[in-house]
Image (cartoon, rainbow, N blue to C red; front, side, top):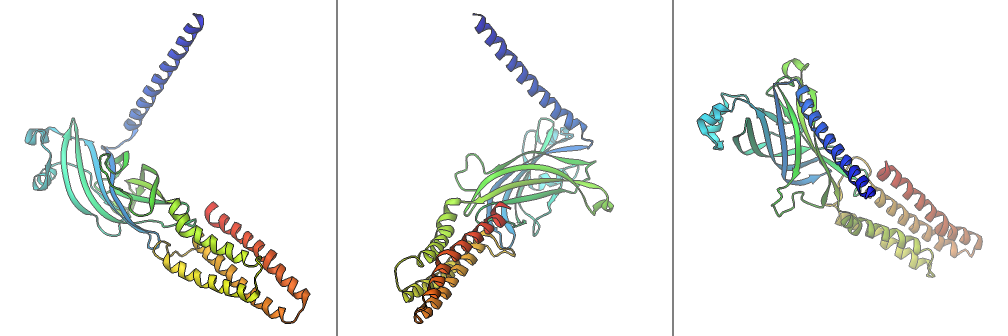
Amino acid sequence: MKKILIHIVFFSLLAVNSVLAASKSHSDSHSDDKDIKTEHLVEATLLFDEIYDIDISEGHFRVSVEILMAWEGETEKFLNKFGDTIIHGSKMEEFMEGIWYPEFFVSNAENPRVTHYKTLDVIGKKYELFERFEADLSIDGDMKGYPFGTLDLFMDVAAYSGNVNKMIFKPVEVLIGHHDAHHRVIKGNWVETKKFLEQEKRTSLNHGGKEKFSYLISHVNVAHNPSTAIGKILFPLFTIIIISLIVNYINITYSERLRSQITLLLIIPALKFALEKDIPTTSYVNFTDGLFILASALVFSGVLITAYANNVRGTNNTVKIKKVERLGKIIVPTLAGIFLIILIFSTIIN
């Protein structure tokens, strides 16, 4: 009985502690909101309907986005005129001329966003401004470990209808598609790994260049589907590398080895051409580029060594033949392994 009572007391204390912690964090969040000295704290939620045309080579992608911004205001004006109706079009534009509302631009957009539609509503004591738009966004297409690693698809929403004294974005949530939509939001051979929403204060040349404005920044980190990367890129390349090494160990004539290495040498550019759409053209050497370079160098060295060995064989110089055999069977595979390790450390791990 005592043990039961002790367990009840213990779990009761845990429950009380968790409630207190939750209430404390809740009050802390409210106190944080109160500590922010701004006229309008704009709660912002972002939803990506489509993320497509992700191009590492050009450093851009396209999005179709929904944004919902909520802030406290004199909602009586709206309720007296429209009641609980959601307004849009000319009605909304005419009404919004008489109130303050958050205005923004997408700072990493390659051209002005294209707005599909806007609506204005009142929930409680807050205005809710909804907008759906599409934009072409620029990104830092740094993915040295391609097809491994992650790519940060970010979008910078910058306020301009007032500095941080006038308005600050309060990040609420970033969503990938509607829960009841049955389609892939992120198009192509990409999968989402992480997403988050943050707010930053940045200076702008606007207002004399000294005042800070609020920026709402969304991050959607994506990675290549590993199974596709292995099947389309890594497996063919490693197959070429392994076959090129094995040719030096099997019991065939030097002329047959030479034909095999030349065939592999011709396959490599054909494979590169076949994967042209899948492999980005970057200013740096990524992991896939490094593998192609390694495979080409390995097979080309195999062609040279085999051709030289074929000539040496005619001189009946057994010492030279042994040296050439050791070069092809020991030194070249060792160097290939060393360069592969260097490639992995310089691209994937770093």
